[in-house]
Image (tube, rainbow, N blue to C red):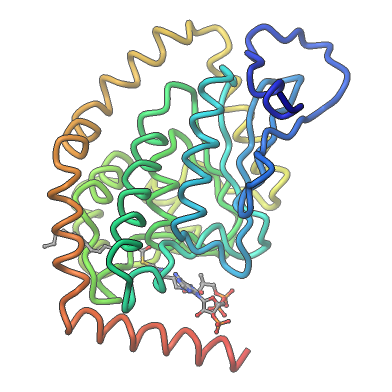
Length: 289
Ligand SMILES: CC/C=C\C/C=C\C/C=C\CCC/C=C/C(=O)SCCNC(=O)CCNC(=O)[C@H](O)C(C)(C)COP(=O)(O)OP(=O)(O)OC[C@H]1O[C@@H](n2cnc3c(N)ncnc32)[C@H](O)[C@@H]1OP(=O)(O)O
């Protein structure tokens, strides 16, 4: 048994507040794209996305995220914060290269990993918060809206911009978005592929707070998680479940159908063409910078 395994078995509810070290890493030795640490004092886990340049969500990153989410729950962490190691991008959403001219088996595993990660995050028993310290388009917005609380830094963008790429945000992307913004705002924004500025996102309720630095964002998330300190965790988890069970059951029961719809849509020649043009545009823009 290695040290990391020993750490993994610790239940944070049993750790006294006066532990000596501040944070401990729970990352597995094989973790490539994430850092996962637990603050010994607060019992709060922080999952940092670390796949430069833009944290695009590929199969491996999604799988690591899911493992971290499971570990946070198994270790009875007091809450979980998701953030990014980048100064300008929370995550650029799904890795378009996983969907553009994809390999058959890999693209299936990719979508299945996305479903699993989302169900783990959306249905997590512990409080979850997103410290959005950069742009969060599409899949980035999906991760943020799966959390219970969002705080964002100024002058970035967030939203479901799929229609601009010629793809469609699946129903479960939309339902999580609908949890946080009014239906009218959601329909208009998602059909337009609108990316909200931080200020706009705050105005419509897509993010709860705006702060100036990543440190302040983490502190806000910690405050949110600490707001449950007098609440019974079991009662809290069951109550949260009542709000979220419908979407979770719907996806669980329709996973294969959802995969087939995804494959059917992205494999259409017109969709592949649109994705190719979009990727080309991103590359051109990146070369100019
Ligand atoms: C009937 C149907 C019913 C139901 C539907 C069912 C199924 C639906 C089917 C599909 C659903 C798919 C859902 C998709 C969700 C997604 O998340 S798609 C991804 C959307 N993301 C974006 O549009 C963001 C694109 N990126 C950017 O806008 C910018 O990169 C940025 C603002 C995030 C950051 O800007 P910069 O810091 O300036 O970085 P660069 O733009 O220079 O990029 C650096 C580098 O990274 C590459 N890149 C950027 N984003 C991605 C990405 N998402 N995937 C892959 N690669 C990306 C970019 O090309 C640059 O590459 P290089 O030029 O350096 O090689």
